[in-house]
Length: 142
Image 1 (cartoon, rainbow, N blue to C red):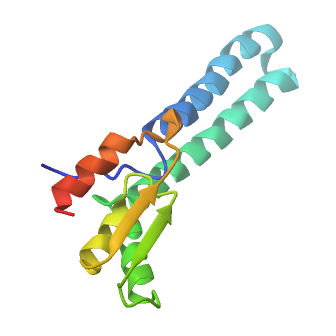
Image 2: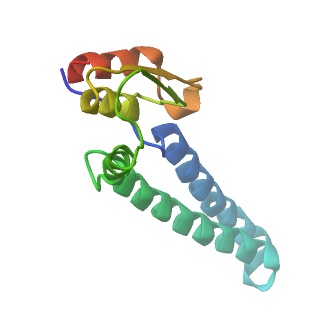
């Protein structure tokens, strides 16, 4: 079984960025035919389309950098946090906002004697679910 930790920049969020970008470009076409190049509405829609393109590309880059399969930044952040956690691993720890459980699971693997619990509210836009978190924990053997 393979883990699926998802991404802070979810697929639905990226689809929304892409939709907004396409919408501005699509809006610029009729504005060109209605007002031509002499009026501002065409240029406003075009500039907003270009800005939306830049934001979308930046978010796509961030999605890659944060991903566990791509740039691995989230994994490195988790290692850093656990390396600097002033805790001996005895007792319990609660990860509030655990998402797909990546940090909770890393903590459970680092401190096998500890009781690690994660909690979150998983709204649909983030693409996480309790079942996904439980499957990740099972796949990691914790």
